[in-house]
Image (cartoon, rainbow, N blue to C red; front, side, top):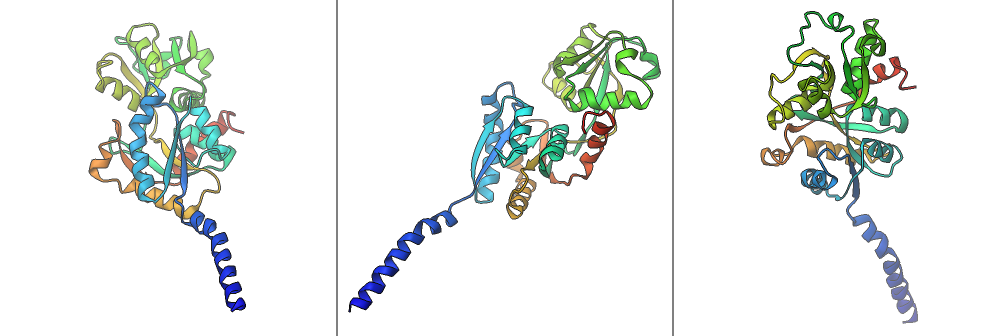
Amino acid sequence: MMTTRRKFLMATAAATLAAPAILRAQAKPLIRVGLAPSQPTQAETRKVWEPIYKIVCDRVGADLHLTVANDWAGVSIAISSGQIDMAQMGPWGFVLAKVNGGVEVINMMLVDGKPYYKGLIVARPGLKIDKFPQDAKGLSMQMLDTGSTTGWMVPTHFFRSQGIEPKQFFKPYAEGASAAAAQMATINGQVDLATGWDIHRNTMIRNGQMAKNANKVVWESAPLPNECIVVRKGFEAALATKIQTAFNTLTADEVKLLPPPYTGFVSTTYEPYGVLEKMGRDLNVLK
């Protein structure tokens, strides 16, 4: 009798000790997502994007913890250091995080049904340029921040491939404007030329912030890969594949939750983004 009772107590104790481990094993994984403020405020960014990430996490059986950082740099640092598990990043920010932190891409975002966008250089209305960039020598140029893909890196790479050093070729030459401010500077005639990208310009036109003919496009880049969804180094591969599939299979009604001009997601690898890594190394901004 004592032996039977002892066995029962031992079994009960073992089951009690094992219970927390079983509960932990059955608990849903937590996916920490980081976003940059793509809307006017962090609160608006959360309001726009949280429903999509909640759908994806629910579909893969995970809980969501979403953080909106102060800027793109904050997201890059967080994903590179493993403080977050997943992020939505611009193409150049992803390349930096890939090279410096081993971050992996799983999805590319579609814009108006396309997986790419183009860098632009726009001119003030009425400016006569028959051949670009030759006819632009001595004109004023406003570029965006030096961390911008199409606002600085892509056009700078183009100019140097043509044997042109922008800071000497354009007079005056300036850096650091926001994308909207650069567009408006050409419209108002404050500068002759400015850099930007087609998605942003089209959005300003769609929102009534500028007319289509308020300035004119004088140069556009080759197609560049869109923003992407990335996961940190060491993230569980099987879960990453499930997340990738969840983004790709959003229903038509779920896709409607995306803010314009985003229209969905497709799977991708690093290959389309390699062109940006090459540009960064050519310009010595990536070692």
